[in-house]
Length: 245
Image 1 (cartoon, rainbow, N blue to C red):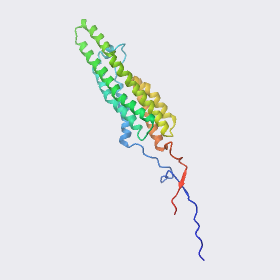
Image 2 (cartoon, helix red, strand yellow):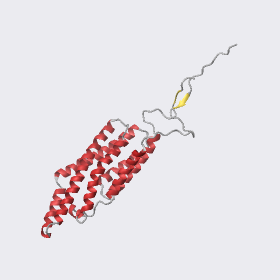
Image 3 (spheres, rainbow, N blue to C red):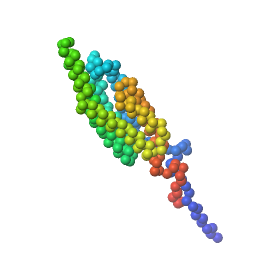
C-alpha cells in the first residue's frame, strides 16, 4: 500500500546567512582604499594644522616670522577642505533622504567657499606680510595695517561665514541622514557633532582634536554599519519562507 506523502508547511530561514563558525556574516561597506581615504584625509589634515602659526593678536603678528609655514598650511587647506567634504560624501553613500540631499549641498558649498576663503585669506595675507617686511622700517606699520585691512575685507568675511555654514549644514545633515537610514548607536553621531565646531575653528589644538574625534566617529560608524541593517529592512531574526523541497 502506498503511503501518502505529507507536505509540511514552509520552514523559516534567517535573512542573514551565518558564517562557517555560525556567526552572522557582516557586510563589507567600504573597500580598503576607501577606508584609507576616510581615515587618511582627516589624519593628514590634522597633522598639517599642527604647523598653523598661532599666538599673535593680529594677522601680521601671527604671520611675521612664519610666512612660509602660514602660506604652506593655507595652501594645504585649499586641498584638504574639498577632500574632507569627499570623505563625508563617501560616508553618505547609498543614503537617499532629504537630510542626505541637504548635507551634500552643504558639503559642496563648504568644499568651494571654505577652500576659497583659506586660499584668499592665507596666501594673500602671507604675501602681504612678506612684502611688508621688505619695506623700510618706517613704513612697516603702514604695511601691517594693510595686512589687517585685507584680512578683514568684507568679501573674505562672507567666504568665511558661508563656507562655515556649509560645513555645519553638511555635518549636521549627515548625522541626521545616517541616523535615519541605519540602526546605529549614538556614539559616532555624537562624536561627529562634537568635532564640527573644532574643525571649523581649525587652529591647533582645536582643529587636530576635532579631526581626531571625526576619525574615531567614522571608524565606529563603519563598524556599526557593517552589522546594522537599514531601518526599512526586516529584523535580523525575522524568518522568511524557504523554497519548497
